[in-house]
Length: 100
Length: 153
Image (tube, chains in turn red, cyan):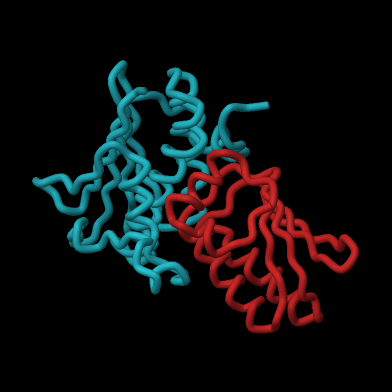
């Protein structure tokens, strides 16, 4: 359970392993904010290994989206399974994020 | 490949739990994932649908417990959250009880339709609970208990 960050060209790829929920959302937020501080601007959050996301996890993604926009960066989400897509559709966050 | 999310701590912390479950956890968000994992595993063993085990149950139960810890008990570690769960051939019923004063469910649910809600960081928990379960109610006799019901498909 956790997050891994690696570079793929000019993109910072963040893998969410396990759940993204109230208990670990701040860790993800801090990892990405640290990368922004280092000058990273393009982010891809990969949900290939993610179980589920709660409202706190969705909220952190919203917060990061705003912060990345403020620095003229880009945030994309990838590899959402059917259930994760349902969460984004229910909350209409599929209209806020670029989902690959 | 499992049909539900991996919960590595669930078996070691709550492995002996069986339906009907009745367990009390401290007001600490680190306990959410293990207890949710234990409930989901038992649901899967009792042939609740894979989608319910991957989406409806973990998300809705996480929201209910999170709400109890953060808003009901205000993360007071001396207070507990009681989780009860039953599953029969008709439905899964989950009850989450905190030591707070309760809340008005209908007044607190905010949907995503208002444009200014879209970029809010919080405020989606009760909406998700209500969207993912067939019924969400405050138990009339005790307003600090939230009951979630999900019928078998």
